[in-house]
Image (cartoon, rainbow, N blue to C red; front, side, top):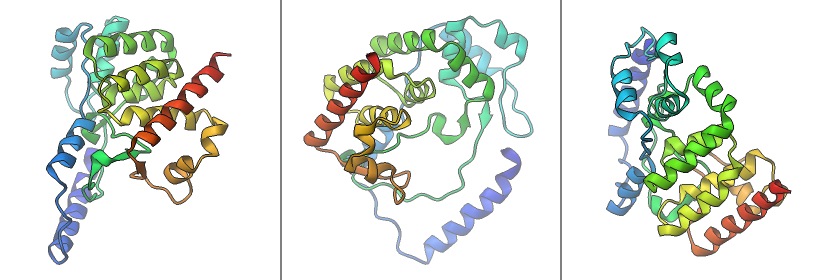
Length: 245
């Protein structure tokens, strides 16, 4: 929260000072940096967009750094407008103090996790998560519509897919990946859906052990090659079919 920022600033400053006494991290290639930014992009829904943006712009920040829309204004939004609001705005403030080295050759890796939405500065409040859960069927329809309309699955939509455990969207993710095979985090979402649903065939795999085993970390990855891409899609397809029975 905001009140912890001074301590966070001290931590980062100390880390920066130490970095000056040691060799700097190597700079990632231009292609790696470009893909890093590509991974962080968000997809903007169109439902009541102008209205929702105007409402967000008027929200006042609390002493803790949260930006929560008043109950009356929130309850006055339609379901579709609440969806847009949630995809554009996290009501809770969050701060990551860790100094994380840049990832090298990011485009050559399929990660176990995708980046957080809102540039790691915001997160959904309990109210926002409850909205997604209570309206799960409608939310999945809106996610699907937004993917078709925009042609992208940004980190905010990926987060919503995981929050609602939207296994139903696996065919949509596969179809979207097949269009240009550029967003490898779509494969990550498929693996995460298999993970959280304890799909035996995936949990017994070498990929699972490397990405989510006891010795893994948030930046764990497997090689981004055609064989791994096809294997993930094959497993995700089998998992989806098993849930349809």
